[in-house]
Every structure is written in C-alpha cells, then in structure tokens.
Length: 171
Image (cartoon, rainbow, N blue to C red; front, side):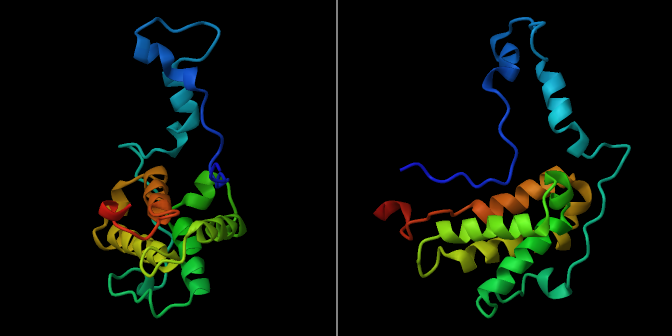
C-alpha cells in the first residue's frame, strides 16, 4: 500500500515547470520560466545579503541545549516541543500553518513510527531537538533563512518515518 501523504507542505510544482533548463530548449511562452516559478515559490522565503533572516523565537533554555533529556520527557511534551521548534524557526509563518496544524502533523508522524526500542517517536523528537540546539548553539540559525531552518527541522522530524528498527545489514 502507498504511504499516506503527510499534508503539511503545498502541492509540488508541475514537473515540466523547469524542463527548459534541463533540456536546454528556449523558454516557452505558454508557461513561466524556471526562474519565475522559483522566484514566486521560494523567493520570498530566502534570506538575502541585504536583509538578514529574522531571529528565532526564543524557547526555554532546556530545549536549546544538547543536555536535553528526551527519555525523561513525556511524548506529549516532546510533541509540544517540536511544534514550538517549528514555530521558533519561522515555519508557521512560512508554511501558513497554525500550531494545531503542526501538532496534527506530529500526530501523523507519531502514527507512522513503529514500536521499536530505538527508532521510535522519542528518537524523532530527540534528533529534532538536537538539530534545533545545534542551530542555536552554533548560531547557524542567524545565517539561514526561515525556509532553510524549517527544512532542517522538518527533515529531522521525518528522517526515520516507518523505520523497521533494524540496521541496513538486517533488512
């Protein structure tokens, strides 16, 4: 069966939107150029040299440290922290989603995780929190756009979806 689509991001661009760039053919008048599609889709999200990205929305210090104890934290609090991290990096505004939308997304992620001793929902939240702490502690977030920061946090959230719990050697 096909995996359920986690409805968080907008629908993908049509595959042919940038075909002229790959084929080397001149742009067609009946569709926008690759540059126009990219500019209208992600242009407003990117930080520019003349305009620094907005700062992170502050979170409690215990979320911003590599010493965070995910195993000693309830799944409800872990989920809440992930929602706060998405908001902090600018993801709510970028994706035009509410905290409830992200919480629902986290519920979908949790439902996709198998009952493994390690590759489970706590692991997802632990990796996400570590990614967030790294962005804060290294000050990397100050140099990344909201799009880039959101991509990093969402990648951490989704990195082990439906992991079978075995290393590649045993799969």
